Image 1 (cartoon, rainbow, N blue to C red):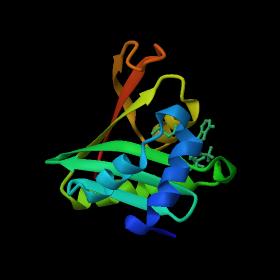
Image 2: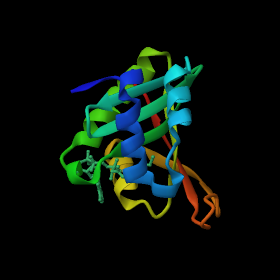
Image 3: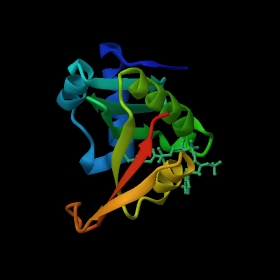
Length: 140
Ligand SMILES: CC(C)(COP(=O)(O)OP(=O)(O)OC[C@H]1O[C@@H](n2cnc3c(N)ncnc32)[C@H](O)[C@@H]1OP(=O)(O)O)[C@@H](O)C(=O)NCCC(=O)NCCS
């Protein structure tokens, strides 16, 4: 079930972070800050996935979306992204931006299936020298 995250979800989110992002995972402290930030929407699909968007004015940023490895390719991220987009629209956002590593085929496949298009490339943006794609989608 997809719902808004609370402090009680911190441990589960930290586990998802560690499993999905390894050394780039957010710390428990950072997860707590995301939950407390007023302009951030944090949704969980308990207990396998979570996602974060931040909304500033009419622009939203997708900060995170992650699904535990065993639960992938079952539409979990798609369901979560749909609700994150709806929630961002409900907070006044008219478009959603994100950055994704150019070698992250799964995430790019997900975003393209939701109508995101690449509007910019940041060369060598990530520490390991991989480019970042900046992708955008309008929120209807
Ligand atoms: C990216 C990620 C969130 C996708 O989660 P998921 O639950 O497996 O995605 P879904 O099952 O909802 O897939 C929806 C669509 O995305 C695309 N997609 C998902 N995984 C894909 C893959 N490995 N390769 C290509 N396309 C893929 C497909 O179009 C898929 O539709 P389909 O299964 O009908 O073909 C997941 O792989 C993940 O957590 N990765 C690690 C964290 C990460 O990189 N997050 C993004 C950056 S913050």
